[in-house]
Image (cartoon, rainbow, N blue to C red):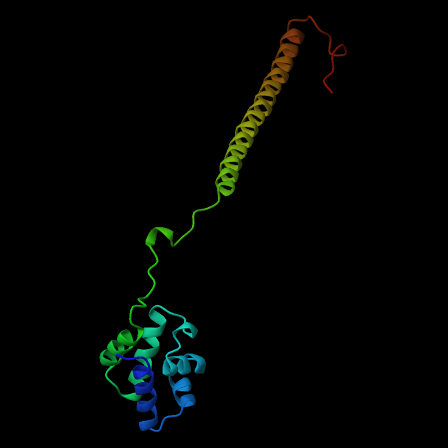
Length: 159
């Protein structure tokens, strides 16, 4: 298809149906600059890829034209300018190495803090438990010593 044929046909079909560009813009929600770019075959002003094909399909549907036939004409008018293909492995960039290192260091710090808190808690609990049993032992030894007559009640007081 020669240059100008697709855009001219699109404009001709629109004018034949007495539809203004603003009516197409309102009905299809396609920007006026994109509609004009399609009619003028100014491919550089279009976003590219599937968007262009969607624009052509929406305009054809609004004007009552055969969508597939108009898309075929669009593809011929575009010629060798095939849609760009993005390889799947390059879609999502990898996280920077400092993020991974930061996460690993954060996990290690949390682990060390957890172990340290556990050791501290165990020592506090052991000291509390040991202190509780030692006071019980001293009270028990006081009662045993007093009953044996070794201590007088005034000699030893617990405060």
